[in-house]
Length: 308
Image (cartoon, rainbow, N blue to C red; front, top):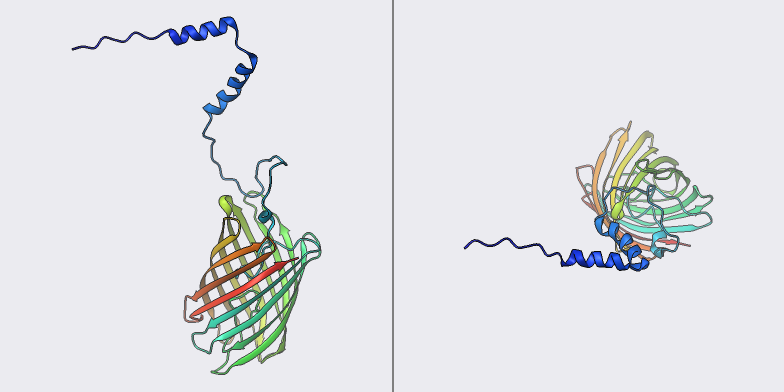
């Protein structure tokens, strides 16, 4: 049986016409006018927003206290791209255990680094460390970067660190945030009393959803006995903040010597986990594995940072 076409209902149109004729309160028409484009555009377009390109926001919006948290240099081999705020201090300390492949294990402690914000862009750095083991603890940026080796014997070495860190640029779009580090390491005990100089450049970008990508390159001049050589270190780390207090990362770093009697090239893979107890107090740990024969089997670095 064929269906009859349904006649259109005109009652709704008549109701609208009647409302227009008798007049509608101004408040209603204004509300409709305001809601109409909002309903039509209920799906805002997504776009990549980098640090330095954020839209303006209402000053009345409340910020989390963890938005301004400390950033230590010890929580990864790659140092932070930022310097300490003016007239503030950051104290960092850590313990490193290194399971060497061809020598006795190494212990490194306390890896103290004291950072002071002299200006908005310049910080001063002072540190100290003690190592004992078959090889130098080259898995921490704050340990001093010693390359000593021993033939089956334990070597004890202590040293002082002093230098400065200069913030070069802030992130604007794809132009990265960056800093330059210059510091020296002077042994106070150990097999070689020579002072070693190191220079470093670190840069990185912040991305939406609390992602951060940093990279660094370091150069140092060192000496073992009569053997003078240069050492390079490169690293890249991808960080992710989770629920304000937690931070996880994965990192690659490598160390390479040049003009040494027996050059070495070491490659590491290292994940880490860190927790902000308060915006000014951080604890964390990271582990790592050597990827070739010139590296230790395994290492662990656990430490903390305090800002005041």
